[in-house]
Length: 255
Image (cartoon, rainbow, N blue to C red; front, side):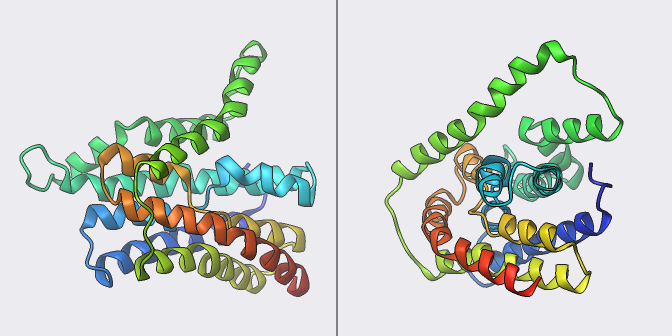
């Protein structure tokens, strides 16, 4: 799947991972957060919620096509199999039981034990090697897939309800990075690499999606960056109502 369009894969990989690390660096340097807080910030502001909202947003606009599935699959693999494991690796060094930083190897092992890390990595490997799931299992996985978005939104809603809303320069920064900088970078790099017009439009809109709900769930799991993270998610979701039509128009205009 990821080799079906190499340029689309490379552009998505470079830009999304680049924005992820830019978010981490900005949160750590500009807002003086800890390594762990910056890691959760990057998981939220540097990752689009493609797995939960990708098809829900792209299908009504571009149709239920192979191209839509390709874009969603590629970006989902990048987010779930690359940025989330990196984020948990960056998060774990400061979570040692004795209050001391763990070694790099210990942090890597600790991150790899989390289901949110090994499950998508395992799924990606199975897809790449061509392993087919028995057809008899389809109803079970279809049920999980259909419940996925609803459960994620419900979990994010519980987290939002548990914290008082706040707005700050840091939240504005996170929102700008997610809704403006990432799709803009995808658009410019995609144009420079002469991506297919339809793929470019879908990639830009996918990059403009609100922050990944998994970042909020991880924030709650480790009790790190929860209040600012949930507020960033709320503002980004509201902002997406405005920026989504803008990016649809701009990407169609220039592609």
